[in-house]
Length: 155
Image (cartoon, rainbow, N blue to C red; front, side, top):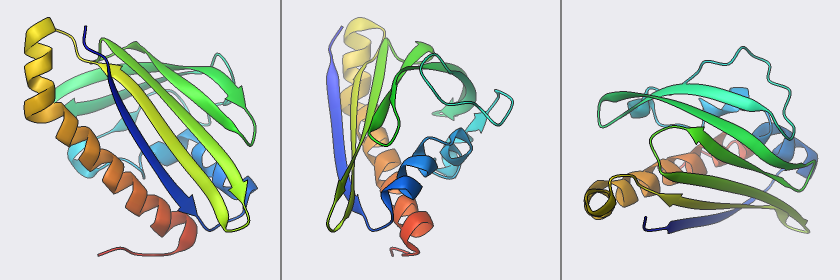
């Protein structure tokens, strides 16, 4: 299994408490996900976020319906949390969210460690599709965070 890492950072000019609360509220996942994924949370809302919380989703990857379950494996209020795939499309998915208050705003850092299933076919799919799809998802997310937390619409 070939391990891949995607890292993104952005400075959010909003109060630290508001930024963390936004990301720690599972209801906001749908707003941060592109419509083409048809992302839907299946777990009844609201979800009490904390270590051990499990969240079930439904989405479409390349038009194929997929169910996904993640578990919050680490939760530090105001500082960050980690969600890991329990069941879903990846052989490995570990998404670390970190928040650092600065004098200019909150540095929001995402680090995703992931691996695709299917051995060499997964490696091929990563090069052909998965890498660029994840980059597009996180680009969308960045723009939506600016819009929803800072009121800035990007072209």
